[in-house]
Length: 513
Image 1 (cartoon, rainbow, N blue to C red):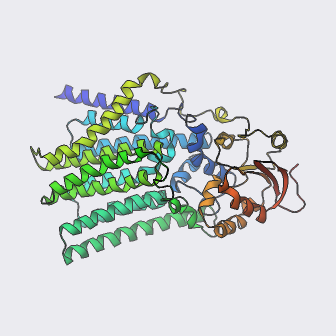
Image 2 (cartoon, rainbow, N blue to C red):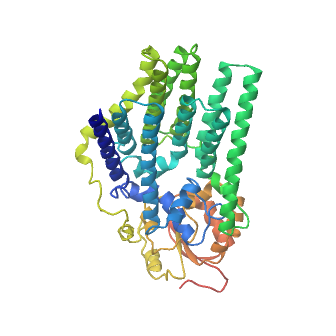
Image 3 (spheres, rainbow, N blue to C red):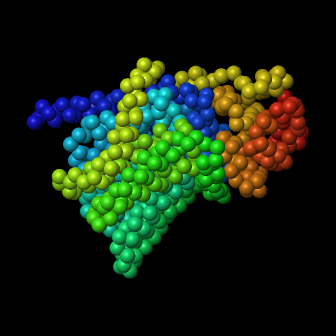
């Protein structure tokens, strides 16, 4: 018995060590669209180092605290800080899954379960890089959802009191509020949907009052905690007036890219998720405990599936597999634990998505094992930021523009490009100081008057000289370019078929060159 326990502990350490190596691997960073998705996290950090501030004049498409933490880490530059933060979250999620598997549900196949989850989390994509190659679709985006899964599992299996339930769910909602507006939607939606199904199971006035009390308490505590954190941030960063609307940049366009023109594969995770849930709910409608178990985790599944449906982008699918696998497996083990020798058809239906997801990911690893790159290119956590510095490039070469940029004094000037092109490597060049807060696309999600007011009141922008390149191939930035030209002292230097180059300075007599 002792030797068997030692074997299991040793195997778990091996799995966790391997997962750590995969989480902190450095070879994936620029293997996706030249760092396009990575830039949405790195650009805000770089802009903050130049004086812009979150919730004031610095937009952030993917959150607040998940940008602020790597900025405060400041370990060998923005890229390295974010890399360590993201890798640490991956390991934290695996540890959370291990804790709920062992301490809460006491799953006998613990190491196999952790191994499968780690594979799905870190090597689920078809190119075997895992979701972290797209940080905008990985754990960094969905971290509060994992916390909610842990909280719900603990609440349901430890017979928590009403006050403890309120406290735990308030904490999850609080984290989501300061994490990102999209995460707030997932958490709030799943909690509300679950409580609604609980009320439908017991449609009484007493139950309604109980759910109303819990729901209002959860929302009040969560938003009060978020307000305290934001006020502490405001005080420490010397911000006079907050622009909270910047925190909701992305959620304002959440449904704007729905299914039109997208691949039919968008429905794959939706079908895998919803059909088994609906069948299991129907089969267990007379079994209250089983029904509420399915409703609880099913509400989380439905909330994150909305992401797949609304975004409808192929690289986003892989991100959902770990969450779907975790929720379906917890439904299976929770019902199995509560009902000894329970072997109904509904349990097999719930187990089916787990089997499909794990089979897809394992088969992917087996077939493409030769494509798995070296786990680490360096034995250190620190990344050589010099490896991310590249020559400035444009999609269409323009010698006049390149000559102007070569003569810039980066100690006194800065540069921003308003483009959707793949040349995001320009944003990783630490020698190039950003003129506008980045990513600039996050500014385009808001009303022009709102953005004009923010930029006009920005001390950092008002005191900054810089060059602005407007890529006219993309209509996205037309209004933003006009706003910058209007509020800054800008003059046109180069007008070409594709690019317009403007020289902007902080006073009427100042020039950059």
